[in-house]
Image 1 (tube, rainbow, N blue to C red):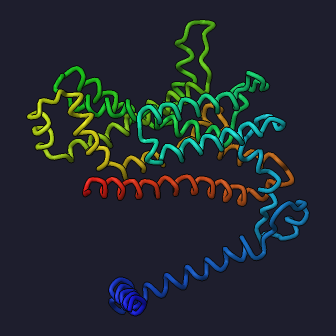
Image 2: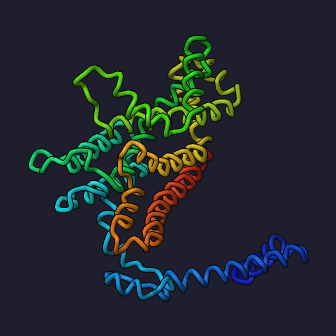
Image 3: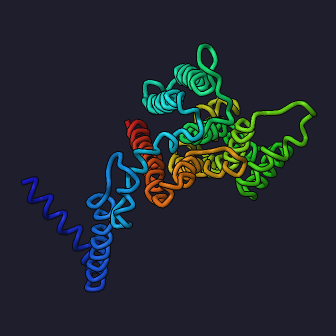
Length: 358
């Protein structure tokens, strides 16, 4: 009984959504035909006629563009992932990226949704990753000027969001504050930062900020970029949180006040949990934008993952003609992380909704 019912539902869905009229049916068939044609061309180029694994560049040149040369990825994957980090020490950023991803996965598990556990996890993971990347205590020191590739992208994106989140919440609350000075400062900060591109903020933090420092005092360039991204993201997170606060009924605040809860306790226990849940899709969208926008740090000479891919291929005269394959590899890596964030946000929405219903 189950299979015929499913087939009947599928036919009904196809009829109602794709073949409900002659015009819709024609459009559906045209779109399917174009997709099948483009798909067959891409599969033929990327899979069937492609060169896989390690191969000499002469073999790729012999393809004359009729197939993809994935040998460039097999030959250059270390430079693509880790940039100009010393080749003999590249096991360290590889281990650091693995550890960092493990921290992210563990943070997504419900058992770690406790302040002390999360703090211990992130402090321990951050210290271990910093030790692996920077060296010391038995490892050869590697200055941040030699860091690059995927570790830089992950670090700037994750910490740029993690540190910006509490600041963004404070700015959102400040913008709704009844105290004129607090509200004015929050509004000016949010509107000023949101009114300029990230490149401008990075330029100010990396170049202009150094001009105002006393002579002989210098702040690491990577740290300056991290602070700039954090301050920039905080303004956008503030508006997302403010939208969630405005979406809550006034009765929630009145009920909390009637229970005698103070301002901070009311927001911590009643208001913010509901507001943050409502804004999960917008927050994840902001996180994904932040992850991709880290490619802009090249403007201040920090070699992120995308630039490392470009340099690994374009700087080699033998492989530079196969930059398309390199960019497709970069696109796949970005898609994996962004898709994982999107899927987790969907699970988190369903999980919190189910928890509230029970």
